[in-house]
Length: 48
Image (cartoon, one colour):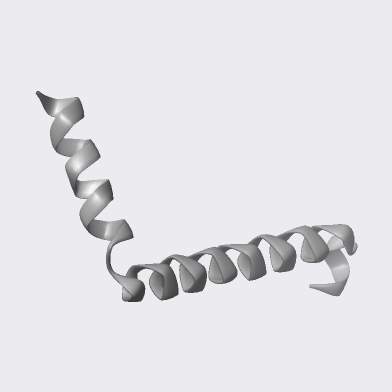
Protein backbone atom coordinates (compact mmCIF):
# COMPACT_ATOMS: atom_id res chain seq x y z
CA UNK A 1 0.00 0.00 0.00
CA UNK A 2 2.72 2.48 0.99
CA UNK A 3 4.87 1.52 -2.01
CA UNK A 4 1.96 2.13 -4.36
CA UNK A 5 1.30 5.55 -2.81
CA UNK A 6 4.96 6.53 -3.14
CA UNK A 7 4.95 5.35 -6.75
CA UNK A 8 1.84 7.43 -7.48
CA UNK A 9 3.46 10.52 -5.93
CA UNK A 10 6.56 10.05 -8.10
CA UNK A 11 4.32 9.83 -11.17
CA UNK A 12 2.60 13.09 -10.18
CA UNK A 13 5.95 14.82 -9.65
CA UNK A 14 7.32 13.55 -12.98
CA UNK A 15 4.25 14.90 -14.82
CA UNK A 16 5.00 18.50 -13.83
CA UNK A 17 7.76 20.33 -15.72
CA UNK A 18 8.39 22.68 -12.79
CA UNK A 19 9.49 19.67 -10.77
CA UNK A 20 12.47 19.21 -13.08
CA UNK A 21 13.50 22.83 -12.60
CA UNK A 22 13.33 22.45 -8.82
CA UNK A 23 15.23 19.18 -8.90
CA UNK A 24 17.88 20.74 -11.14
CA UNK A 25 18.19 23.76 -8.86
CA UNK A 26 18.56 21.60 -5.75
CA UNK A 27 21.11 19.38 -7.49
CA UNK A 28 23.11 22.41 -8.61
CA UNK A 29 22.97 23.98 -5.16
CA UNK A 30 24.15 20.80 -3.44
CA UNK A 31 26.93 20.42 -6.01
CA UNK A 32 28.14 23.98 -5.42
CA UNK A 33 28.06 23.50 -1.64
CA UNK A 34 30.00 20.25 -1.86
CA UNK A 35 32.56 21.82 -4.21
CA UNK A 36 33.06 24.76 -1.85
CA UNK A 37 33.44 22.50 1.16
CA UNK A 38 35.89 20.26 -0.64
CA UNK A 39 38.04 23.13 -1.93
CA UNK A 40 37.93 24.93 1.42
CA UNK A 41 39.20 21.86 3.24
CA UNK A 42 42.12 21.68 0.82
CA UNK A 43 43.58 24.92 2.22
CA UNK A 44 45.53 25.04 5.46
CA UNK A 45 43.49 26.05 8.47
CA UNK A 46 45.44 29.24 9.14
CA UNK A 47 44.27 30.70 5.81
CA UNK A 48 40.60 30.41 6.73
